[in-house]
Length: 98
Length: 484
Image 1 (cartoon, rainbow over the protein chains, first blue to last red):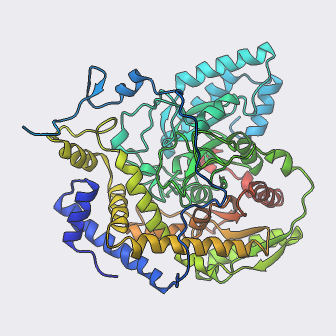
Image 2: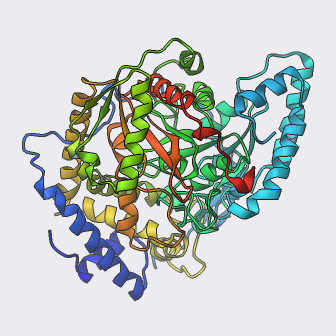
Image 3: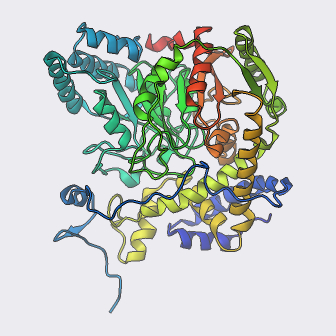
């Protein structure tokens, strides 16, 4: 498996929406490359014909419930945690520019 | 009072020899006196616990039946919600976040009359193996203040080891309960996946996360597990099983059966740890157990697949921290994109960023099959190998960690830190119940832990084998000298 390059790091930063300094990018490139080199040991494992594990418990199944009104969060408490709110709504910067 | 187990303390309270108010006061005093040395707590519920204690004393005076955990002070890792209290996850991102609902575990503990005393330190969002990734403070090992308590539940482990409280809760995604229990010389238990509800636990890697207790004895772990091990409709992975009488089961006649040892897999350990581990097995042999060799060579790949699966899940779980509804919002942000980009930059520490990026990489188009899908297939192989192994034995024994605790700041390379988890990750990958119990001390007086794993749903068997080991040894009675 190949080294991860700066272009790839820039793409990941954009996908995960975390701004990073040049210094952080350098460190990330080196750390991620190291980790991926280690992970490359998986190349030795033959998984042909093996199903991927999507659930740990064989007994797990989809849980459904009636569509009825239950307990909800208290608006006052919820808004107390919001960085910015107005009139009972969360306030964000403009999404669509003029 | 601080030397008492949860069972003993509850007896005193039930008999009326001590009031809940006195227990609460004594606990807060002991924390005030000793926590400065180890930094286990991030916040204390001083007023709340006094108020609860007063009401509990009234309840006892009224003759009403008392709960299973009546009068027992319990600390909670700061990634679980207690309504009205801070939940920081030891992250700057959530420095002011107040929980708007109770985690199921917090509710269950209070319904059984436990006294919740405060929140403990952790690696940010439970990502780490030393608690050094906390944005707020270092936690120190009560056995050696220059050393790490382990992680990520380091605060909860250190609090119990220093006898600041007899029980605490941690969460375990790849060993975050068992490794700190081992480093701090106490009991740490990770139940079967799905046995304890994660509702109100801030999610890290949802196919691996499980809540469990720290205690000084196996009996105390069994007691709190009777309370926590219940079906919860708010967690779709919660097992629809009724709770089990774990404590009573410990006291039933018990005959040791076969214990599986993955000899070849353990070969890589250093000499002292290996000798120590094989000495502990003599305790089981003396009690009539038969040791059998089980093939778990596949576990040498467990770290590689863990750091693919857990980071993939973390990258999706942590996407919710976007600076919109709660938590950090950057004051520099002028546009919506900048709210995301800058808030995450300012709110997350280096390890969290590293894992989000790695998780994003292994899930990204072009790499998903080579990394994420491949890891899921190897996970299937690991689960199959465990199934085969458990056809030959009741439980499997391994060390909890290849090492005893290490000095704070000693491990700088992230990958070296990940390698800490080589023996603990497998239980999470396969959803198995697993316990770490004190099993001895190194030449420089640092604790070793012994790990036992059972098949899914066999929580009671794991506790029984651990209890038998504990009864035959004295390691669990040792208190760090600074905290006697």
